[in-house]
Length: 189
Image (tube, rainbow, N blue to C red; front, side):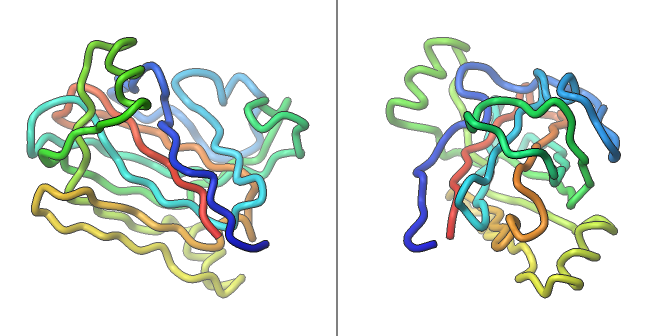
């Protein structure tokens, strides 16, 4: 693979998550587990993913999140959901909104659909779950890293080489003090 970058995409293009509790559990799941409010991020030919978290509310409001690694049968169309898949808790954390807001066509369409301006996180925490640590150690993966400036510029969580252990990812949100949650996704080499 050379030079893979699919650009950025909003996790929820025309809506936001307003979930106030985590609901997913690990194990073998049917396709109904990946219906709203959850969405599969198919890794396709990418090896990793960068995530810039965002949400709606004021500066310093928080959201909790979990990242679920998904092993599913290949699908013909990347947006299709599999009929069943195995999911594993990869890791979790919290993010805090800063003051940077989304600009451009993604955000104009999102604003038109939701009436809400997305504000990006400037602080991110992340901890590997037991399974996440296991695969990082077993497959000698580069550990995920956070860029967390806490200065109102956009923070980022980078997960290199994730496709060595799964072919899709789900982000699950649990609102802390923020009104809604979302994320900007970039698939990477």
